[in-house]
Amino acid sequence: MSQIEQASPNFYYFLCNPGSEKFLKEEIRLIYPELVFAYSTEGFVTFKETRRLGKTLRPVFCRHFGKFLKRGSLEEIKSTYVGRTLFYSLEGEVFESFPIKDGDWVKEIIKVSETQYYFGEFKASLLTAKTPGGFSLSTLPELAPSRAYLKVIDGAKYMGVQFPKNDYALEIGSSPGGATYALLEMGLRVEGIDPGVMDPVCLNHPKFLHHKVSIQDFHVSMLKDHVQWLFVDMNLAPEGSLREIEKVVEAIRPSLKGAFITLKMTKFELVSRVPMYLNIVGKMGLKVVMATQLPSHKQEFLIYAE
Image (cartoon, rainbow, N blue to C red; front, side, top):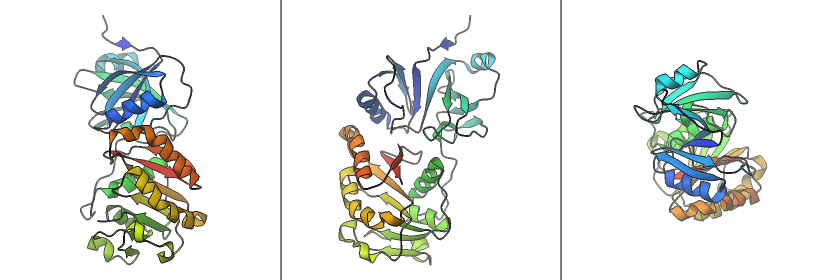
């Protein structure tokens, strides 16, 4: 007799960064009361839909999600479905993959443990990951001053953003230069605002200008050129980061193409304020396109706005 457990259509699974499970559970409880917690292990949480969802499903504190169809051994799942699937583990090992495009319905197998595999599906869109499980396919170069390099690479890939060479980027919270290095490597011109020390690989680059002051002491008149791209990653509580960038956004809004705003979850209670943070960004005259965790994030999340 088969050991596969057949799920009704109203179960969902979510992949999040290890350590963010508590944020995801609280967000679901507050924003999606139709969903009830079912199961979790590190980086993987499932919920049951008790009544029809009243809004579009896409929690902030996950990288990827889908509808749960079955679970069982790998052999049992593969014996019941012979089409192509994504196949990966919760550790980020990718066993089977293929190109997907927005609008495709995609089946996937997730290795949760040596004996337990989940079979699910999702509709590819901006709301779902572009890579299996939302894991990063990027590696940190030896010269990169910090892992913030990966935040830029992962964020741009997730949002499908391509930066024209010689576009102008402003980075608030640039030290020691991981994100700056990524932008320079992509051919952008960059101005960084941070009282901290920048790595020489950035400081000595002809396309980089460092404003060695805090954002509190920065004046927009100090900007050298029109800004097309804004990057924010400061060691402040979300309210502080948003308050400090408001004057900058107001000044650069006419030329701005997109903003990548990273907010730190300095305490658990901030989960309930996430909708307020998105609203604050909207009141700056920006349209929030997406809010999500990236694989390179720790206890933080990205707001991408245009």
